[in-house]
Length: 431
Ligand code: GDP
Ligand code: IMO
Ligand code: MG
Image (cartoon, rainbow, N blue to C red; front, side, top):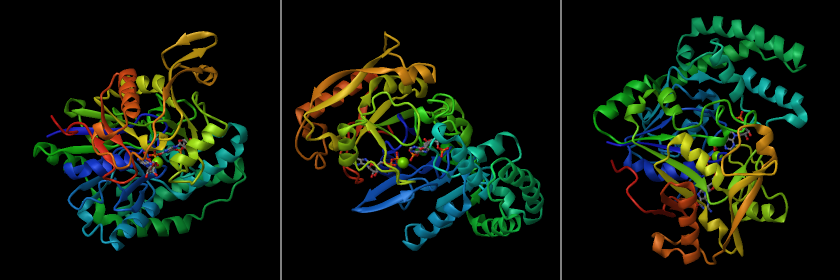
């Protein structure tokens, strides 16, 4: 039995969905443990693309059971839409393959409204959220007034809980933000319907997880976002509202730290970011445009163009420390083919001083000027490579250098969006 956590090492969109889909057939369970439908995880199998926002990326494997843990915030409309689409395609034949924790908190309309109203008011200082209500939903959870998935199954109690919250939310929306109020009766009607439709999927997911561990099965945890969007370890306040680091698995899924075996950090061969906030290696001009075009860097959730820049080894080292990576996956290596030169930041200059450590404060991160080393590019289409030895020598040298700079072995290399376009150098679930 091996437990493996797969988490983003950058600002999200590293290709976690692709890697989780590739790993899933080896696992009994795939478990999401934080975040919500701010995530957009893209899977490509036999040329067919699936984008998942809430359902874990193990769902395309017919045998894997997919858990949505208590640490996730669930927008029932989005979850049901995904379940319906998967059922219609014949991918999901049995509700027992997707289990939703009754303890997960529910995203309601007022969360989305507040998210958008706050961003609009913040103007130039906006975080650039996905507008999916993630922050406001976690706020209600932490202030202990949220509504949980299990509450949807109790129509009588639900009315009271919704009424209690609605009064405050509509006051805030209309009086402070001058925003449209939400229709409380309509929310209640929909919430009852959600409960009816989600009931076959609701579960005590910690028990299911415990059974799999006791039976000695492989379990895969699927992170969303990435280390630098983590509420504590990211570029605060330009972050999401949950912990995205590997350690968040323990609370968000309900597993003890003593039972975690391996942590896979997932990075692109370069860097992207969606939304506001500092990005030391960002290329704002033509080179950034070129990376965006070559990598098809447009958001899977909001369609926004992703900001693009070079790989940042300062960030990778920081993420490796905070998450305890045992291995790295380097994705989208194919995208860098045909560039004359590929850069990696190995250190920063901050206020005239050289540092190899990721700075503590937002101001320092904003003022960080990367110190680059230059690598010769490589040519040719890498998407057909299946062994490390198949890669051009300069591409191999690049991967070896990433491994040395991060101090973590690169065990997986992705050379295309397709499930099979993957190079594996060892057995990821080995004990
Ligand atoms: P996630 O949020 O971490 O799951 O990543 P996204 O799905 O948001 O973004 C990654 C994008 O890159 C998706 O469009 C993937 O299909 C694509 N992708 C993943 N790995 C590779 C790769 O190795 N090469 C190329 N060209 N595309 C990839
Ligand atoms: P996946 O799982 C990239 C970013 C938003 C914004 C900030 C806060 O696909 O990698 P939020 O809506 O969470 O309050 O927005 O976080 N963000 C992501 N960026 N990938 C994601 O998820 C993201 N989820 C949130 O763009 O900057
Ligand atoms: Mg994504």
